[in-house]
Length: 309
Image 1: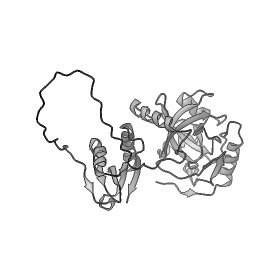
Image 2: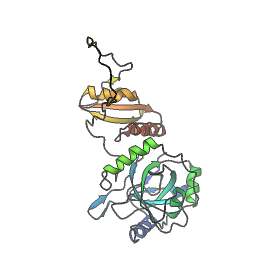
Image 3: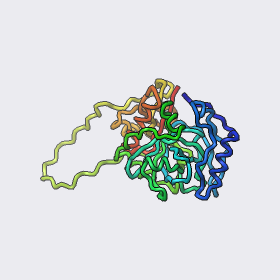
Image 4: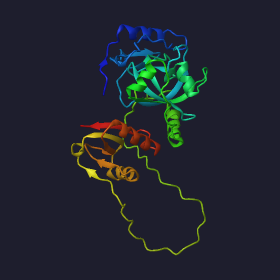
């Protein structure tokens, strides 16, 4: 269930914002948001756009926010497992993953910050302790917005730790690290997810193994067999069932779209001038997010979740 969004910050959140901006490290984690009971998560507030240096940030209620960057450890927090973020709603919940170890924890976003452009998130000492992050380190992390059950929300609101998530697989960590290297310093992921680029042509030919082979007589050329399960082409998105989809990419030619769709058994459609490759449909966003991680692990770094009604 999506929480109601209030685009105007109440007084308590404004106090939290001012305390965050005034800290010497770019954002103390002193929050005056109420923490008792489920009502403490209502309403979700955003606030007005703001600027740090020459970079502008616009808070947005993005359900499928997924980004990589660097985390710093702030002072205070009273032992809570919380974080400061520039654009996510207040409060909201994220899974925070260390890209060097894959260790993942559930964290509550409570304040705006950090007020510096080279850092994606600032976490409390409690969150750093659970993730094993040293207080004076700058750690590469992944942030993924999630909707945890109420029992885990209550644990974080009361200042306790929720259970650690499963460690992120090494294959996915490799992809995430490559995404981090591409950013300078945070690229276009300040308000993730990024837009899928047109015609990325991610399918790369495999290099032959450098093993010497005996000479053989040339044979007559034979037609290349068709793939066992060709991609299904649909005329428009109106023909697709309602649900959540993982969009792999947008291509200018059907041939490139089919090459990308084949290994993943994806569906190809042409709702407009481009050929769209998608996985799905999935009945829930949770199923789509699982497929999204598999797609990114396969090298499709710009895959994103889309909903078709």
